[in-house]
Length: 354
Image 1 (cartoon, rainbow, N blue to C red):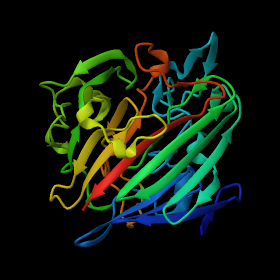
Image 2 (cartoon, one colour):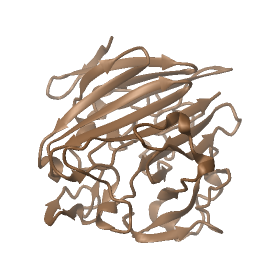
Image 3 (tube, rainbow, N blue to C red):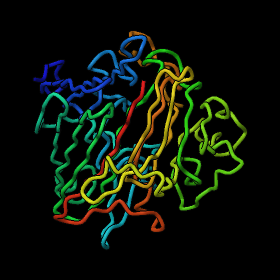
Image 4 (tube, one colour):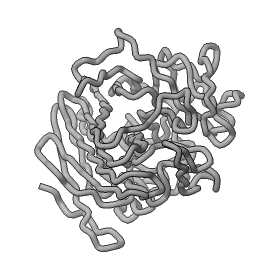
């Protein structure tokens, strides 16, 4: 059963649910379909490895988007506009006054979702987004299910629209495998199954070019600590203030994760990350073509975390599975378009070993 943990500014109940399995225990809430806590049982005890606000009221703005389900469209849309089927759609310019970021400031991660199903190991949330909401076409129903299975958090996103439209969901959790509030993540070791990343302009909007990672500080084909090269004199890192880039995932047979396949969709290992002392290791799996590595470069240092400490800059790292940013405006990218009346389902998995 859920527990009321607060109320929105409009007086709606905010309800949290706990789910568990194996070495994992999670808390999720109906506000923003948000992942509030993720506890990993280690040899040294229980460790909450995702960042989040101490005070529930801080989620109403939540500029870093701690734990949020991002929809309708994650990441950036250049010029805050796109064309689809001959129509032009204009969105909120909430990123540098020019682009759209994570669908706009009033998007679904700042709304109450309905609880459609709950059990000991899973919770399903749903929300209806009307035609024209946030500037996007189509009456759309979105559902998100969090399931814990075999030491993995499985996040299933589904959408159904009555018009052809775009859908690019992600989860915006920040991980710190030392435990939330325990310093920065520069000693976290990361590996990404990608040979290239999408080139972006000065405002982090991809333009269609793909850059080979070979010989650059963007190469994570083998494990490297995040701090090893984050301050390198390299244009992409200077522009973003660290890692905040979309990687082009390699979907090859040796990376298949058939145990997570679903609805005809194939899952692949996208990335791995581990604590410097090897106490916890995690793998990320997805059926989507990209993953955004974001090292919390814009965490302000003024967010009071669940632990009662202020989170430092780079206090967490996000692995946001996705269609490429700005894909709707770059026709060479795989398109985040779903068809009218045809259900769409995508899955992301975070699997942990302690």
